[in-house]
Length: 179
Image (cartoon, rainbow, N blue to C red; front, side):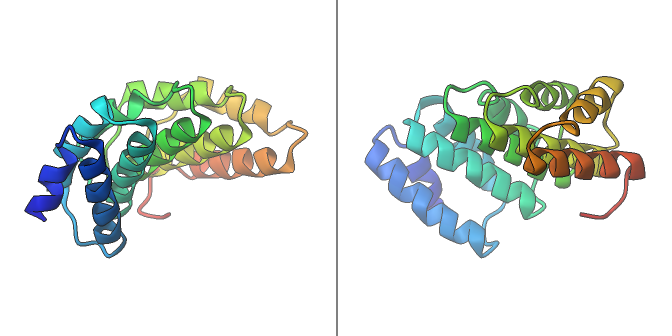
């Protein structure tokens, strides 16, 4: 594991990329802990788009594995308005997974609400799902969030309508151990 973490810190993107692949496999088997958060956050600051997208995924996967750390939030939040729709969607997903691990703040909640206005439907859908996670796991929501989700319920896209309805149900239920 030590070699993987050192590889993530490498300025050689080939080495960093190979370490990311190895880390992804370890994450899928839940064999990585909080020690990976620092190197992943560092990689987000200097990696290429491909490595950055995968590093965001890894931070989200750590959250999914119930490993959260407040250091991950600013790193993930930096990609909420990235030019790449994939990075924005991964950012929204990672914020939701980190919320599931008990980590989130008002800045990330605000960013997720703003993402409901994204041009990409996948980003909007993921942001709405993550907003549901924030309400369920962190007890965080506000009138602006509910207003935007209510508007999204009127979308011509059934995909977006269903995501908004699901998020609103979670918000209405309030904090719980579910999801």
